[in-house]
Length: 219
Ligand SMILES: [Zn+2]
Image 1 (cartoon, rainbow, N blue to C red):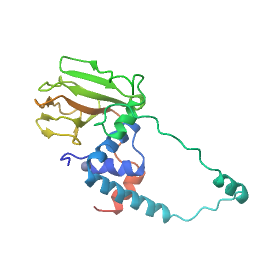
Image 2 (image 1 turned 180 degrees about the vertical axis):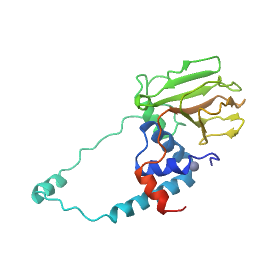
Image 3 (image 1 turned 60 degrees about the horizontal axis):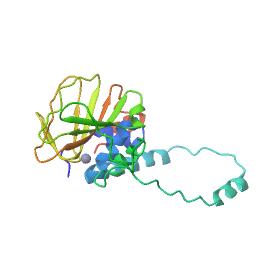
Image 4 (image 1 turned 90 degrees about the vertical axis):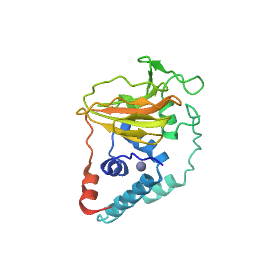
């Protein structure tokens, strides 16, 4: 059970579907570890649905027979492509990995950045404007080099763990750091630490639906 969760505003925007793709991937992955946040997102989605239901109905003029005919067309079965990555990876990450050329048949294409740090840049979320998405692997006991970034950095642990001055992060835990403070994560000594990392310089935390929900609902 994770100890470090996305802020409420991220869950609200996730439920409203207004997050940039990279951040949405991050929240979806946290949800695979966290029953509490899953429950909260379900509640938020119910509130969003109730708000939509309360809107006055819009009259839609259409050829009813044609519509019925369309509805009767059976959907061709869509077999899901085999997922990339390794079995311990949460589904959203494995799905994101499917976009990189060597997956799923070959080993993951880790690229060494420094002695202790390797990374895989993910597509397509890495092409999201303002967002850079990658998998990070810090060797056991290794430190992530101190770095600067223009925006907010989100690091979600997938395997192993790391510590910084704010705490000890284990699978499912989300660390959020802004340009104002630097931190130096150090991987646990009992194994490599693999994280999903997103750097976003342009993230707006609260969308229109988030504003509505925040204003009228207290959880
Ligand atoms: Zn959570």
